[in-house]
Length: 162
Ligand code: PNS
Image (cartoon, rainbow, N blue to C red; front, side, top):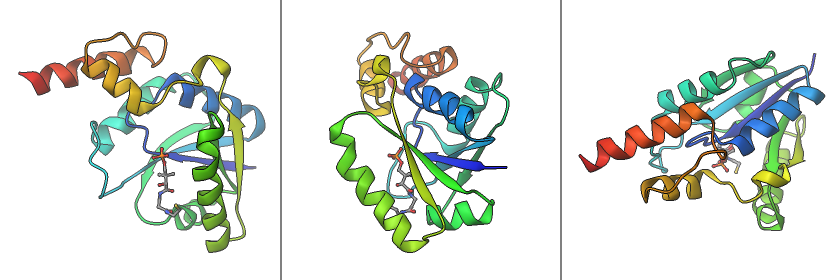
């Protein structure tokens, strides 16, 4: 049984992430979506909100669990019995950062490999950061994020401008 860990900030989850989860399930038996708790990075959504949004968006997918972690990713992967780390690659601009991160992780623990999947062409331009900016400025993010995320973004920005 190969358990893959798909780590990230997921602030919030997008269709690009969902596509990687679905395709990851075609390769691995189980995918754990692991939301990183980053004390340096103040997110729009809390850790619990992010997890709830991911749970809702993946509820029809078999073989997915949603979790969060603090500290080093490789320690988390070891603790939960993961075999591989999955990351999505959008374009060449992602490569340097991803290469660096995979190399550090491999240096820290050579038992795990990072498995890269190219993001589907429809979502090449989608990132959580741009989604938040578009939503904050009143633009439509329909078709780029799951429906529950679209609603949550709207509610979040309405609450912030109240
Ligand atoms: O979605 P993101 O923000 O690109 O995800 C980055 C993430 C969370 C996967 C990365 O920052 C991470 O693994 N953080 C945990 C801390 C860690 O292990 N750092 C060493 C590798 S850079």
